[in-house]
Amino acid sequence: MTLNFGRLGFGAAAIGNLYRAIPDSDARSVVAAAWDAGLRYFDTAPHYGFGLSEKRLGAALADLDPRGEAILSTKIGRRLDPAPDVDLWQQRQGFVSPEPYESVFDYSYDAVMRSYEASRQRLQRDRIDILYVHDIGRFAHGDAHDARMRELMEGGFRALTELRAAGVVGAIGLGVNEIAVCEDVLAQANIDLILLAGRYTLLEQAPLDSLLPLCMQKGVRIVLGGPYNSGILAQGVRHGGAVHYDYGPAPAEIVARVGRMEHICADFGVALGAAALQFPLAHPAVATVIPGIGSVRHLQSALDLMGQPIPPAFWQVLKDEALIDARAPVPAA
Image (cartoon, rainbow, N blue to C red):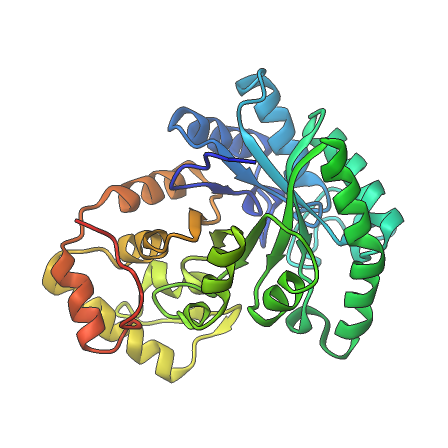
């Protein structure tokens, strides 16, 4: 199927109360602002606030988008188990959510079918446009990866392909943070999309070696999540203070590279965040970029950064200084 994502999409983890609670009214306001700004692709997951992100997104779009024009993606692979004794005011699995559940990995056939139906109800949709497999791979599962892959291949993918064949899911794919598992799955399954978080950015271009060419060959499109590599490409390093990269403290080598990028940005009058958002879109396999958006201020910043002009000479300096791969396509002026 052909999906018109637009250059900028909406990552909805933050409206699931990622790291901190936000009021329902604030979540609704940012979804409404995104809709009014022309965004039409929204990505969520049951794991995001243990159903809270899906509920909030579904409720907002039920009013904003009664004809169902938005492209909605959600995920399978983490079932929501009741947790009646949890402290709802404390952060758990990264979220501060009033939903009394915990998410547990499960890629079995039955779990995928139940997850799809529960997501469809929370999102208030008759069908789901895209269903991703959430966090399969050694990064998430370590020594349990092989068993999880068998569970997915023998059960979960059978459910996904049945849902796609029935037309109740438009497209299926992976939502992951690593490259190797994408190539493993592409060798075994017929998928449409990969939501790849943080692995094709200003700081990382390893997918140029084999994953992106393979996606081009197979007609698999990339949705690029995590364009700021956990924040370092949004805030930079020149201000001092703690900076994060790939879900942890940034190592010295990364801090030094970002510092050099910031110096070049200053020379050209380019915001580092603008370069981070626009760079991945130059590759023909990349369909859209979806930063996490948790407030109207964050949304406006992303819109401004996406629209900022960047001269071709800027990209050439990054290549000349080996700060980005010489093979990487770069945005046209």
